[in-house]
Length: 344
Image (cartoon, rainbow, N blue to C red):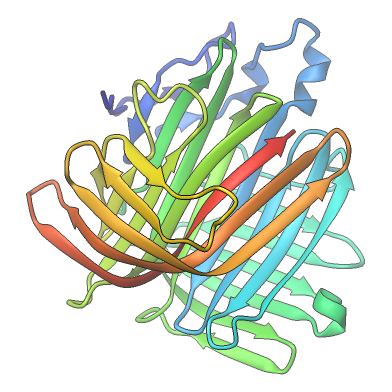
């Protein structure tokens, strides 16, 4: 069952229950997190709310990503880049106790996400026709430094993959995934400056707000690229968290239009992540093989908060079937697939 939400409403009712459950092509719900009611003693709730803006850009040469997150107990700021030619992966991150100085907007459709101190500045802004990513981190990777000024164009009428699902009785997840936004600007790392061409470079956003179980697990797969005929193709696949009985986040994004899929199976060997992964859905509309070429393994252990993610970068090959029955050949599409375990 896949219930599509089309009517705007608050995310939460006054008693903290979800107003609607399902998926949507547009972010039609208002994230009124102030109405969350999962602890009897309300001041404790802020430590369990999770909020993040995760931007990513695929270029012919590299993958670049920047994140501003507030996990309740702590803020988490990180940037990483993977050079497809050299296979060099570099990442830096900082933890900010209780998220002091982290700014995140109420909704994904407007506002500013921001953090700055004497080490770095991350500034994400939403404009009517674009999203701007600004990164300045002079000490990134042993002083080489990384800078980025990137515009992600938002075409008129573009669609995104939005889901709202319950997690237990009082917890929930409200998530927006945007794929295939044409990217312009530059990324400068050390002595190398890469100019982004919107004809070859695409960006994406993972915007999340919610309250999760303390121990959580999920799989996520994503890609943004081009078909042989020049159309943009995006993948967003996920499982492993919450109640997905009314909707999941699985979709193919063809020329900025969502083609919704049902359940998708992640067939891979946990612990041997470099082996090929297989993706199939329950309606015969998706069949992909993903062959990794790089394991981004990231571990955090701060006692109360801990996580381990294996984000595999690789190439997708196979096919997907659009809503109108078109069989789309996917060939050597660079993307990622991940396994994530968290205690947060």
